[in-house]
Image (cartoon, rainbow, N blue to C red; front, side, top):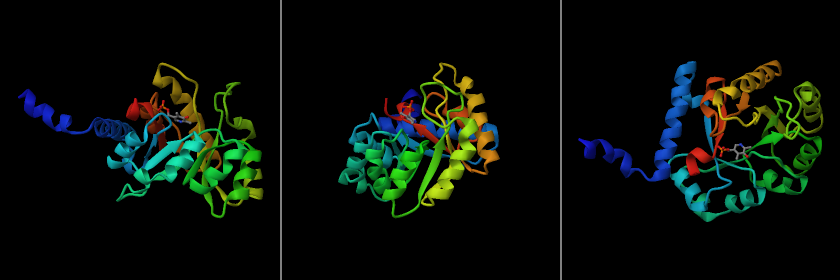
Length: 233
Ligand SMILES: *Cc1c(COP(=O)(O)O)cnc(C)c1O
């Protein structure tokens, strides 16, 4: 019996099997929370992946790709090995801190920006955009000294400033990176805090959850999870 049971799994390429496993965990978390898995976007974070590995996740049906290394984003957005990945066209998500001197790559190539937390970056981006760009504002929900993100108490002021001065930055949600921990359940309170803040501000998007804690993030309402290691490591 062993041969028959194992065969279907073994035939999948390794990355295809990892994509299937991550999707199954998202579906299970949705099930626990009474959510529709179609409301959760899986973003494959490619910063440590080779172009061949990225192509393999695209071939496995993942069309949303995340980068925080913006030169790599620029190179890969133009790489024929990826742009030719029919039938689905890939969408690049810029997910990490952005320096103003790289704003042009995000303005040109990104489908969405997940780490808006500074007005100088908002300024640099909107000056280079000739279209609306979906943005999530990064919030430092745990108030960690070394972490990027707006303090929760300053969010209202920041959202107002962006809305007033940068109509091309279409703020659709909030994003967070909770404190590193070995226990995924430790992230739950920070995901809830982000969800509450998003609710207060009428924002539908919640970009939260990585390899360490994406199941918990989905249970708490994530609309996008950013997963690297579970797909590529
Ligand atoms: C690297 C990265 C991720 C993915 O982290 P993994 O632990 O590899 O899943 C998610 N979000 C951001 C902002 C990242 O830089």
